[in-house]
Amino acid sequence: MEALKEHSIPFTGLKDGQHRFDFVLGQEFFDAAHEEELTGGQAQVVVTLDKTPTLLVAGIHVEGTVATTCDRCNSSLDLPVTGEQQQIFQLHGEADPDDDEVVVLAPQEHSINLSHYIYECLRLALPARRVHPPGQCDPEVEAVLGHLAVDHAENLHVPDPRWDALKQLKNK
Ligand SMILES: [Zn+2]
Image 1 (cartoon, rainbow, N blue to C red):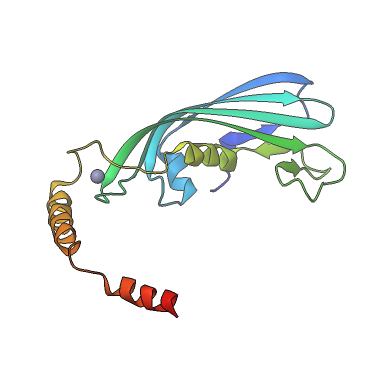
Image 2: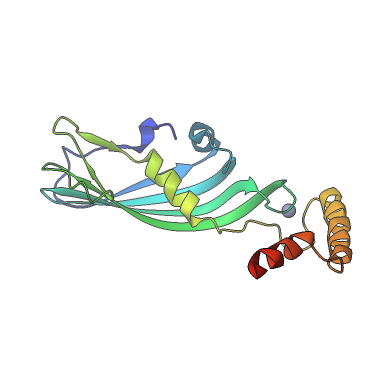
């Protein structure tokens, strides 16, 4: 994910306390991601940034629709997504090597960029299995899948030679 300028938050000038930032994600965002997983979409992002003298806690909330690929027919699939993610930035001090959740900022840094974290939030909000609702897959692929399912059912009655090999191993 490319860091987009609009997702940069200069924090040095911010007072301690809560700050809200709103972003709208469009095609430009998904193009800058250079990822095949999400090819497009439209989403609203609300970032609540909590600043303390030592930490920045960014609460990221995304809501919208993303374009991805159907696991079943491989054609384009639009999915509604809602995601929630938290990212903690440490303003100074030593990095804890056991804690990879916290990003430690170098003393000269004065802004954070959230493009990567927003993308992660969207990606993690996707369901593990992404498929069209029943009957809405690409009809050509559906026809081929239908034939495959029939072939597979017929083959179930034929013993799989691997099972015999496995049985022989166990008997030794
Ligand atoms: Zn499909």
